[in-house]
Every structure is written in structure tokens, then in C-alpha cells.
Amino acid sequence: MSAIFKREWKAYFTTPIGYVFLAVFTAVSGVVFALSTYMADSASISNAFTLMVAAYVLLIPILTMKVFSDELRGKTDQLLLTAPVSLIGVVFSKFLAALCMYMLAVALSMINFLFLVLNGYTVQKGIVAGLFISMVLIGMACIAIGIFISSLTESQLVAALITMAVLAVLLFVDMFNDAIPFAWLRVVLSWFAINSRYGMLTGGRFDFTAIIYYISIAGSFLLLTVRVFEKKRWH
Image 1 (spheres, rainbow, N blue to C red):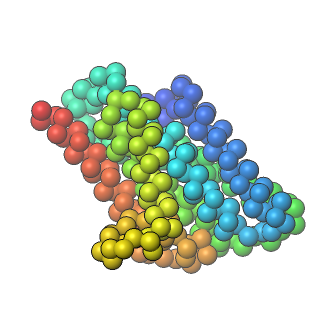
Image 2: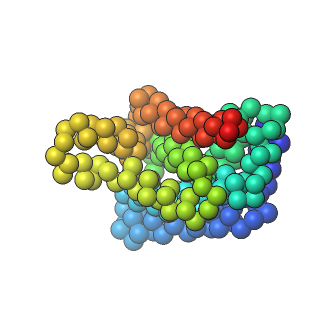
């Protein structure tokens, strides 16, 4: 399991994917913070966070599109199926490598808060901590979704485009939920809405149900990925 993690982690730095993701993530977070805080002459970070989460529709697919698509294209997925590691271990190792890369990008984006402090703005530590936790949890869920989609196709482009579409629906469904005439469908869609549960966390308050929700979404899609490869193994 550790060997797969190390291979995946190194792959982000031996190919352009890791550098492109870090560069784009850092640039987008910098622009978002500049527009919503410095140029707006405000220390409020709620708008910056909302815009940053919306950008995940484009950012997360960069990170996840090759996780399994590359294996399928190169036919090396057969090695994973016969490796002396459980499929759960294989999937989790790849997920953990992608999550660590994501958290590195998030850590770099936190430098923006340092600039706020240096420019004389007052930033509440509880809100910053809640923001960081929210970004990690939402990132976990989005990465797991991207990895699942990556396991369905050998085309990185197709994986990226489908992931963008799915994340766009899950992140923005709340905006259009009221326009849906069917009550049962509104309930279902609101349950899957990723951006409807981080409010308390970003306000510096502990929300156990939100944490369970994001972990459940991540776990569900990772288990679906395991099922995909279990089916391949038996066939």
C-alpha cells in the first residue's frame, strides 16, 4: 500500500500534472483573494471561499483525471488487480496521494491570510481554521468523485469533462433547486448538494453532521471505485 502511495505521489512531480495543478490552484486562489479582499477593502473571507469552491469544478479534474485513466490506457490496471494488495488498499493509496497533493495546494493558498494580517486586517483564527477544515472536507468529496469517474474511462479528457459536469451539478444545484417542480427531487438533490453544508464550519463552529456528510460522500465513491475493479477482476 505504501509503495502504491509513493509511486502515485512521485508521479505528480515526474509529470506536468502536479506542477500544473499547484500553479493553477495557487494562481486562482491568489486572484480570488485579491478581488474579494484587497480590492474590495474587506477582511471578509466568505466570498473568497465561495468563489474558490466554485473553481473546484475546473481544478479538481486536473488532479484526478489520470488517476486510473492512465492505468486503463496503458493496460497496467491488470497489475493492480493482481498486486498483493487489496483493491481497497489500491484505491485508498491513490486517493491519499491525490488528497496530499490537494492539501499541499491548500496550504500554499493559506499564505493569502498572512498577507491579510501583514496589511493590517484582523482575521479570526476560528474562522480560518473552519475554512481550512471545510476546504479539506470538500476536497475529499470532490477528489473521490473524480477518482471514481477516472476508473470508468481510459481517456483523461473524457474523465476530466465528466468530472467537471458532475461537480458543477453538485456544487451549483442549490441555485436552481427552487425552480424544480417535484418536491421529492428537490429533497434528493439538496442532500447531494456539496456546498449547502459548510456554512457553520466556515463560521468557526463545529458541525458534526457536515463532517459526516463529506466523509460519507468520499467513502461512497471510493467504494464504488473498488466495485468497478472488483467487477473487472471477476471478468
